Every structure is written in structure tokens, then in C-alpha cells.
Length: 336
Figure: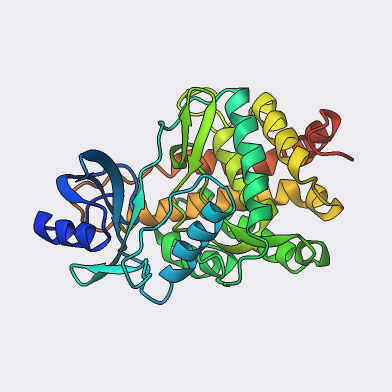
């Protein structure tokens, strides 16, 4: 969501007219993430003002993007509150700007809840389960591009930038995750389309009301448990406080797990492997943040995330794996 590609206003206006979304009155770059170029685009149609999000994709190509965009449309049509890609008169939802793939979606109402309460965590847990079930009959297939194969490729790239202590941890965890992935229990995990990046800034709330999930451009087919673990690792972890940063918040985690299971109970294999997937989720984001931090791309508005937070999360997940599993079971979040 940094601005890598400067889109001229007249080019954006032409695309919005082609999509029958009205006349462009304002276009402004969005700061925040580091994967794509995003703009808020305000249009006027029949006297009514509407806001959209225009995305220019920087890493994903024309061959990969139909999966993400069609998944969003599929989920929207199943009643899941997600942005719906705008189509032209030919029904095309993938477009071109500055020679790069682009899409336009409706802007969700509300704002991101960066200090979530138990109520917010419950809402996210239940909606995540609904989303997983709604995606079961989505016909397209694409692997999680930031999954195990990417971890195996990327760890050697970041190793020269790490301390000996960090290198030991990342090598050890990668070996562990490869071991887990070879187990029959892992291969039995329920799977389907997952968001894979459902952090607090990718969900909109109006007060306690969940308005929607967005930014599906890391989505892919993976285990639903991994998606839940990634979500727990952001919504149910302490942030910002130096003494507690990276630590697990049992109260919020129990609420999210209970709400998720009220819609889709976890299987025995999922209950067994939740601690391992919490570690996997922490490794994935520590690794991607290390990559972005040490091997950055130039951008007009670029703020790579500090990788230290997810290093702390991973160390805690490794240290407390056994205690965490017992705690969650005892509290009823994960039935024994």
C-alpha cells in the first residue's frame, strides 16, 4: 500500500469511467503496507459521491490475479463482507494502468480497530469461520505464495543479515515446520481459500460492528488452521508495550477461538497442530518483514514493519508451545 507507481489522474479517471463508476474528483495515495500501490478514488455519479480503492499490483502478475479478484467476488456473493471488484461492460475485473495489472473495489465503511477488545476478536473469529465455509466451493486453485516453499527459498536470502542467535532460531524453526508439513496429521487438515494476512489493519469496524475483511492479495489455498493462527498472532498478541510486546493474550485468544468454533468446530488434527501453526504464522511474518527490512524497494511512501515484533512472537510461541496448548484446552477454547 505504499506508492510505487504514480498513476496520472487522467488515466485513473478514464478507468473509472470505463467501469461506470462516475467522474473522478479526488485521487490520493494510501500509506501503510508495502506490497502494492493503493489509492483512494472519489467519484461522483448521478450527484452521489462514492469512494473506491484503486490498486496497482507490484509483485503479482496478470496470470495470478484472477484468483484473488474472483475469490473476493465469490465471497461477496456468498454474503461475506468483502470489497467487490468492479467490472467493465465485458465483465472484466482485472485492468491495466501504467502497464501494470490493476483493480478497483468499493471502499468498506468503518475503520481499523488497532486496540481490539474481546468483542472485536469474537466478531473476527466468527466471520473468519464463515469465510472459510463460504470458500469451500470456490473453483479456482492457487497455493499460498508465502507458504512453506517460499520460506525455504527466502531463509537463505536473509541469513547474511541476521545475528548468530537469530540465524539459529530461524534455521531451527524452518526445520521444524518442514517436519510438521510431512506429518499425516498436517496433510489431513481441512483446507481451502484463506486470507493469510487477516491483521487488524485489514478489517473494518464501526464501533463493535464488523464491516468487512479486505486486502486479499496474499490469499491462496492453504489450511484453514494456518489462517486462524495468523489471525490469532495479530489480534490476540500484545503490541507496543515494551514489557509485553509479542506476548499472548489468553482472554482475547479464547474469545476468538470460541467464536470461530461456534461456526466451524476444529477437528482433532487441528487441535493437535494449533501450537505448530501459531509458530508457522509467526515465522512467516518474521521472515517477510526481515526480507522487506533488509532488501527494501524504493517507493514514494515506504514504511517497512520492524521485524523484531514477530521475532518476539516466534520466540514466545516456541517457548510456550506446550503450555499454550494446555491453557487453551483448559479454558475451553480448543476442546480436548
